[in-house]
Length: 233
Image (cartoon, rainbow, N blue to C red; front, side, top):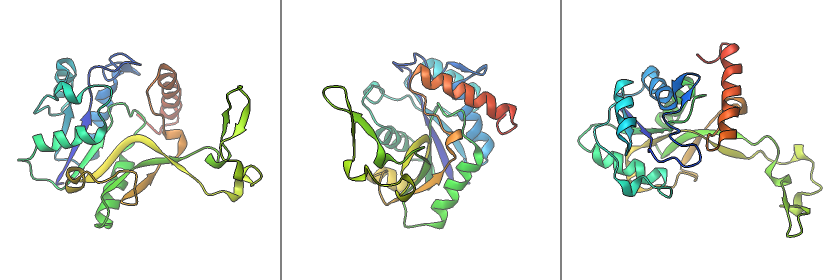
């Protein structure tokens, strides 16, 4: 179990203030991701990368480690996940592990079986750098519509206007839950969205990225339904 989970959780969320600490079904959102990581049995260390003292205190109370505080320069609205991971791995350079999993703090629908699948994929494909959660789009992206300058509908890809939807190849989106990666791949800056990555395909009903209040409400409805059906606890 030579792996580390790194959970990025900055304090300055704008669209949903204090999102990582906000109660979700009565439990602070980040506490759910920490519990999922701990319960998976996949990680020697579960580390939270944060710039916020309150988040750090809660993370430790939930069983995670906060061995460093993230600098303000890496906690703004423009810093990407890769830079946060590199900083975390540099801060943990004295730790002996080969695989690092970035696990988002706002992933209440995540199940441990998918984390296990991601780890297994990387172990089975030593030539690959990453394995992360994706789901298919609910409708072919080639048939997407957009609005022109006059506000009228137009085909985003006119060449597929007459193509039957069943004849178009499926497309996938990032599910925004986790990213397994080799330590060396994170440190080299390998490209995540590339042939160096493998997909852990999730059903759409288990996916909800949470950036807005509308996202949050939809996630609550999904969680309640899954909990009632016994699929989540």
